[in-house]
Length: 152
Image 1 (cartoon, one colour):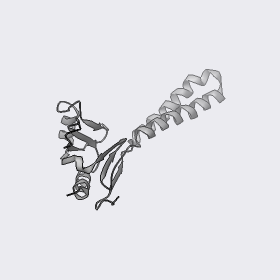
Image 2: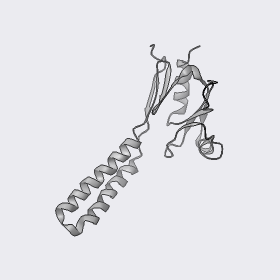
Image 3: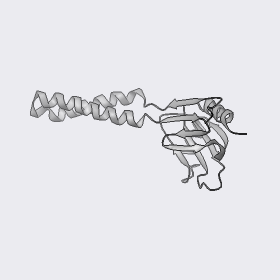
């Protein structure tokens, strides 16, 4: 397996406000357990915060990578030979492709807190997926990596 000429890797981390929300979930649990005493209250604070932080971290741990001859987006692994043109989407186009332009057969790696995306056509005739929609903070760089790594 040959490494890509333009390697790309991005982790779509959760926004900072989600960590504040995780702490607030812990505070809520602490307030619910307050009538049972100080120790249950502290346990609720620690446990509620930890559970909410794990949920935020797992949702925000998805990665997009161009490795060798494949695009790996979350759990999906797509050969570059099956991909067509990549279209960089600005914030307005990103919103449009998430809503009224969306095809229900498309593969969506959607993170609503990321304002830009990349839309990549799927050219494999055996695949019913018309395109990939990938939320990314660096769509130009991802499109360039796909173009450079694609077999000629």
